[in-house]
Length: 331
Image (tube, rainbow, N blue to C red; front, side, top):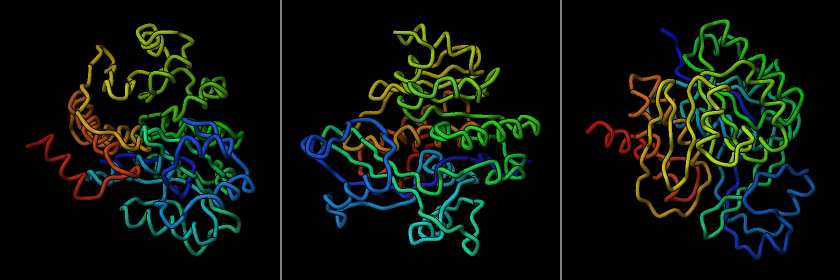
């Protein structure tokens, strides 16, 4: 028996989420709907014009949200990341502890620097726009990868955002090789269309012959495969992944279980914030498949959980909400 259901690797960021109007983007020259990497000066300039008193702060980053979801549903998870010895770094360490996620962070030995921050701007149409200053997490490298945790996990979960830096890409490939040598399955998420658009070759290097499980939305799937419709894209994805999930927003999702496609129905909800929906889908799904549920059942759980996430502000469920979603799956 392995100790962990999922070990994740990714950029450790403190999410600062707030509501904005489209006029805010126009006034501040922000490209809507994408994750954009910015320097500290640019991020500070944006923070100077927002009402931080109304902002919601919690530890985040794509893979962090996913492993926290695994934990909230009752699974065991571990996270490899990098934060600095500053106020936000210590906040991140405590939030991870409170979320029940083991990790590689020693609060007594954090490096000097600046912890990464992600400004998550949410508009009335529920779309999320992110401006991210990576800070010390841009130095995440092979030495931050806990090989023992990966070997003692059923799955390694790799965040696609790491692909932007040479050391991040090296860490992704090292973690994947470590997992494969130990019989740990490998899951990868593309994370954002911009990552696929600008770093496709890096993803191809990381994926190699294939991964066990791939998470993508429709746009990412088509960008990666070079196809202009989802039916052709899903056939092409079979070359890159043994199993995969293509999320389709309000239309649910499709799962390839290695043999057939399974359509996952959406759950009716009123969307107010799409931030974290894909991370929650991945976390709920991975909890399911590592705890005795079928692909179809895990997809149903993931769809229920992500529909709950988009109906509220913020990328994370409360503990009792996760238990309520799970109870709906197993009445």
